[in-house]
Image (cartoon, rainbow, N blue to C red; front, side):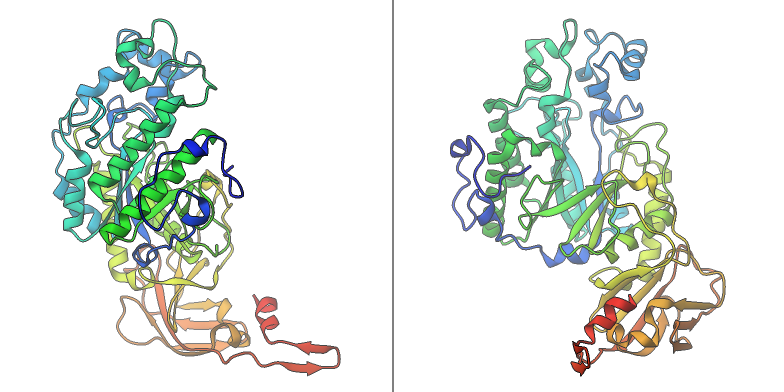
Length: 504
């Protein structure tokens, strides 16, 4: 839980956040405003790429579980690579070669996917920084590939006109590894990678916390990202003054740079209104008043590269995207490249397929805002973190709405089977919700469509959909509804606003 009414113990010892209009208090950080570029972007690319990709076994948490005796990873590692005291996680570093990595090719793919921002992992829980942190020897510039992943990718991505963010998972490094006699994690020579040995439930000490802040501040100062994404682990109580200090530092620096930036946080790690809330592998079942983000992966079975990814289809991801943006969110979609820097053909195909659909239907996506209701249809998602596996796939009867000015977009989550589509939420009895319909068109099709509006909905005659894929988007031009008029009846006053609630 975050402290919003009083400072956490020890807050007086937090480092200075630097000069600027933001102070290291939740009240001051409430001056944060969500940039329009972020609200407009809708789709971003997340990249889990690092040394954990080398063993390629099931999960990017391999470095944690390889040291836990009750885990299947422990036996697998010992049998495949050798005992944990002889071959530790550090010994995978030479396998992270980046030998075939082409940042420009990645940037081209991300632009082609329809994404508008890109967020690589700058440091995962394992303790190896992918950027130039001056106070650590465990960076990709000093060990392994000897390359600055964050700098090279940032230059390529920004060259394509995309926004560029970074993610930090560093905080969990303190609780990530297991310390046991015979493991290399207890060797003092490597305590700057694995953290000093300590009890599993021991809070992070002050040197670790100050180093966390120094790492993260140096990351933003050197690379000036448009967005910083934090994993849940900064929510522990001992991080409370430090995460406030970082946010103030970053927001003040962005003011000096003339940039509009974003911090993503999970759970209750930041006070409402001081950043943008992120839900991991989950969605919401209603429109959220405050803008939000979901992060998920093309792979069902992990984030970093592994040999059994269980990739999702482009169709299902496009449907998720439309569901999320109809509820005032955006989607950060992860890929897991191989250690040499190549992206699997299957994941590349998913991204390019999504991009092709977005090039035709992007008007219903980019720059839009939620409408008065998010959609209609038989499928409801289960809201919350890690709930995506509980959700059934959408159907062509599921529609999602987005809006831009007086134009409403209705997108089907699947291709309708007939030549008639009934949009039930737009019936003539709901003029207070929509107003008058002036015309209906289908994105990607020339010319207006025939339509009829009755009490049961807006019936649209569709053109042949032989070549349609994933879903269709209707552009519905409207005349805004008149302002509700108050009338009096025998029971007292009555406002027409109530008709909207009862109709929806």
